Length: 147
Image 1 (cartoon, rainbow, N blue to C red):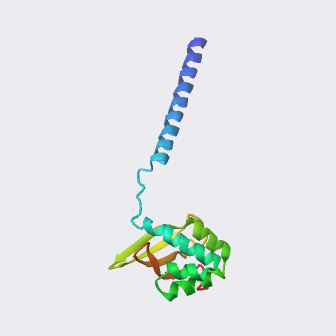
Image 2: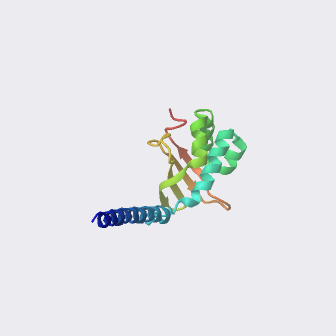
């Protein structure tokens, strides 16, 4: 009788272990496959925005002028570069497109980071396609220069 109870306990424990392993495998598969992930159509603007913010961080006015299509983003970037440099460094490395809007030959992209740093004050950039890569026509964020 005791042997039968011991076998039942081992079988019950084995079922729980198998169920736990199956659940862990399922969770790992969902995380790895990310079935609800969608690639943003505004991903093409991530690298130009990062290069622009890196130039702002370096306060490189010549590089900013090469990457801008008007004076406004250059002035904004120089002011931002003189402000919270730690926040600007995070944005220059970790920004990603959140949303955007195309109208004619311009595209406005709203960027965010996966951090709590200025998470309610995103960076918005309007780009115009040039011969090479997109150039910044307008840049703004209350996280930096407009405090």
